[in-house]
Amino acid sequence: MKENTTSRPFIPFPTPLVRGRFIKREKRFLAHMELESGERVIAHCANTGSMRGSLREGAPTLMWDSENPKRKYTLSWKAIQLDNTWVGIDTSLPNALAAEAISLGFIAPLSGHETIQRERKISEGSRIDIYLTDGAGADCYVEVKNVTLVEGGVARFPDAVTTRGLKHLGELIKKVSKGERAAMVYVVQRSDGRSFIPADDIDPAYGARLREAAEKGVELYALSTEVSEKGVVATGLLPIHL
Image (cartoon, rainbow, N blue to C red):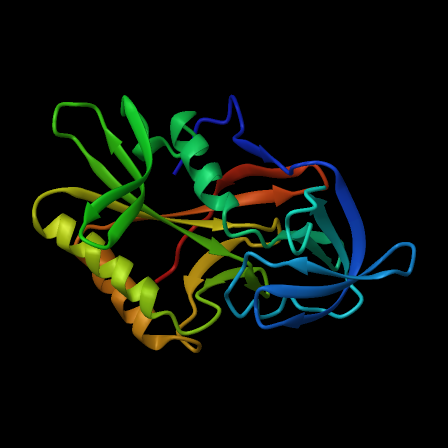
């Protein structure tokens, strides 16, 4: 599958960025860090997943300093460096990157729509990450997932059992069953993934549901990226093996 590479989608990290080293994670939302000065601080962690393979004590990190005295934790954790590879851990970034990738035609099969909406309500108590429409009924519902787990060059999702992820797949399957178009986009926030597979050993139910979704017509895309100290840039589409 080829994509338009004339302009690569890019989401910059907010500034100023602060360097540190990872010490430990606490209650999912908090991460203890040591700054270059030796000062110990706590940063907010937007990633509520298990972050399997990414919590390496002593690894270099990047944090955004909001410089907002009204925030309890002014620092927000953005990335960690593992074996010279930066890994983006901010779960709010993939949606923006996927939307820009679609807008720029970088994910060719999803291009051509006039309108791209984020966080559109599709049912009571449920929203879709990206809704594409051209006003003529050719709509497409797109769910986006953040991927940080890479083992042996293979990107894998999920990194923990996910009932929410199962629900999202079920909603996409329902859309396709009604004759509508639906897609899953997995954003791999690190550059060392060469392919994508479901993590059956972690959540076999999710893997089974993903295969069902693919068989019933839900489109699957895995977006590769490169994370740097500047931000995250999309680099291509990875092969998906089910």
